[in-house]
Image (cartoon, rainbow, N blue to C red; front, top):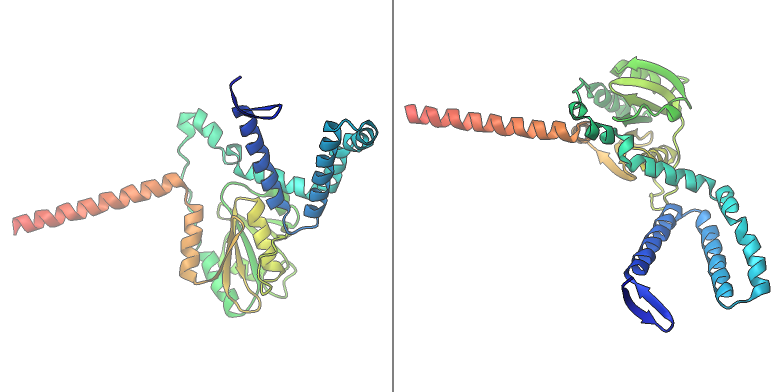
Length: 294
């Protein structure tokens, strides 16, 4: 093994440097995940206790090391119990970013399955319903998913599995409807479920003007690959939550563009760009031919 440098009796190699960097990144990500919650104080306390245990072992304090060692022996089980919500959130984030979640791994293995078929998905009912709901200051929470049916969250509400329409959305979010309290989940042009319960974000940076509806939308976008549309009950304004970020006070035109960008895959975007370039070239050629004839 090639050593990089030495500090006293310690010889540091490239592997040690990489190891320290990876542990630092892991601890920082865990801290970011728990920042703003009570769990971060518990995490810092456990980390401090573990560092003390390492110092005690290095100093060969047998009695104190034995006591702390017994505590550290059940530390993993205690951590699972104490940090159960944070561990679940961390695993959901990993599942969100993995290629298995989007089917890209198997699509890469089978060449004939790489091209996904285009499906007609008209978002006009969503935009029109949002405009009507905003005009009457009726609150709404609409989850748009392009890769998953979100069965876990759909089963928390009432399964509908109906084709998307403006009238159906308006009837669901009517203030006198028993289904209005909660979120609607839309997948592949169908309303899968209504009155769904969404996870609430613990982000303290969210301004106080946003209520529970906006926090639920933000929390859903943090742990799933979805886009959530919020219609404010107080102001009637439109907001979109995506990847833990909130876009506020959007116009209907901006809503349509953002939602279309989210629902359109990268392959479809490339094909549309190629079609546009071909159309431009065709127009330019026809214009040049017309000028040459004249």
